[in-house]
Length: 160
Image (cartoon, rainbow, N blue to C red):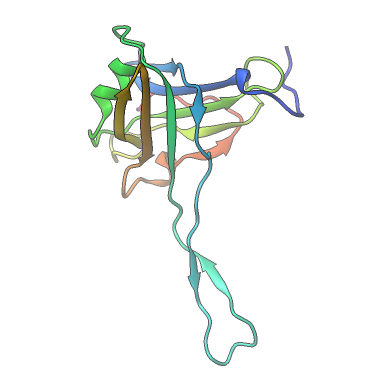
């Protein structure tokens, strides 16, 4: 099927994290706001006619949740518990399929981590309650531009 444009539903959203030598899809039922936050730095002077801002450096974090899954190498618990609080870069790929499973050319948000510069994302919080998990994923401080999540249309890959 060819890449499409238009509206879609949550069924065609795929949340992937790197684990070992592959990108693994996690079963999630909630994904928080996806995108970058740019702080506004006030650069106004008293003599300026209007107040103005410049954008600061972007930050990224997203909260996810879903069913607890203890499958050995692909379950949410195996992946998230091992990554929680570990400052080793991981890759992220959130794929938004348009009216069908995602394919190249459709919107995605993520980053391919770089081991040499430790640029990418990390899991900063992972909790389980009543058969459900919640986790927070954020950019590692000091990540190079290749390790900062961004919007695109091509698949992300495991850390190189």
